[in-house]
Amino acid sequence: MTQFGHNVDSEPATDSTAEVGTQSTSKRGSVRGKHTKERMLPAEAFALLGNDTRIGILQALRDANADKTPVGFTELFEQVEIADTANFNYHLQKLTDHFIKGTEDGYEFRHPGRKVVSSIFAGTLTDRAELGFFSVDGSCHACEGDLHGWYIDELLTIACVDCSTILVRYPFPPGGLDERTSEELLQAFHHYVRHHYCMAADGVCPECTGTVETTLVYDPANDSNFDVTVDHTCQRCGYDLQSGVGVNLLDNAEVLLFHSERGIDLSTEPFWHFEWCVSDARTTVLSEDPLRIRVNIPCAGDELHVVLDETLSVTETARQEQLPS
Image (cartoon, rainbow, N blue to C red; front, side, top):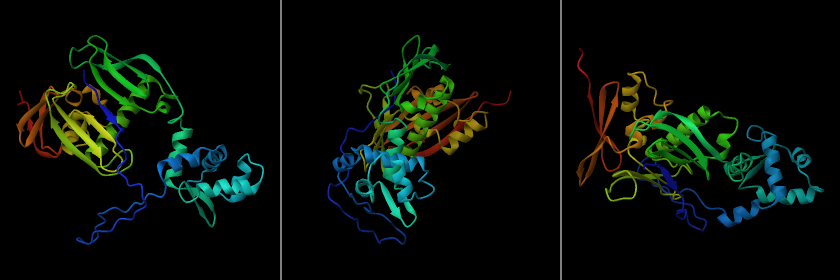
């Protein structure tokens, strides 16, 4: 069984005390160092949001398109169900500085406020959804059987009907199922997962944009179906992604060009159609210390060989092409 997944169980890598980092001056223009400061504890943030009036204020800002134009006090007050301006102003000020900001022209979202609104009103935090078995185009790389998918507990799974091999299992927000056919859902899922892994492989956390540390791990005795796994860990929030090697190469320039020259667009072709993305079968360990691996990527009778080091950096590529007949 093969699968992808992420873990966010580790504690956030932030201090509980307010702190401003010092800037490195060893290089002109450098911003290395800690520049964020924690204005409130997580419990305080949740407590601030545990009030119907404050949620109503955030919803009113969303409805008034506060991302583009600040919303005046009076207009905002008229949109929220509350009796007097003093009580309204009390709740408004509780949100100001962290979730929203006040300007001369009115109130608008700060990034945390927009994230809260997106999560609550898009159903990310509140909705539940389930979707029974549905047909998925493609075939199993293990037995060439048909594929099907299903969605439960916020996980979308694609597996073989015949041998039950799981090609991919990954968290997907329930709102992604709304107003989509199964084909549209699968295309959205492809983009969502690909985007996450490509960002992580580039060193950017898809959850908080913090710095991601990437390592290759060779462990034939592990519980997964991969002997070689990729581990992406955010150094800021603890967000963790694990997978096989191939899916992390979906935005590599040489890999993209190799497929494009053969009429395949990797940005739109579902990644589970490619054995090298969802299986170890085309991954070879070249050395263990230091760890170096090669992924053989076939397409239209030709092969692209991609060699990577222990940090997932591509160190070498080579093509093996068919001779003209």
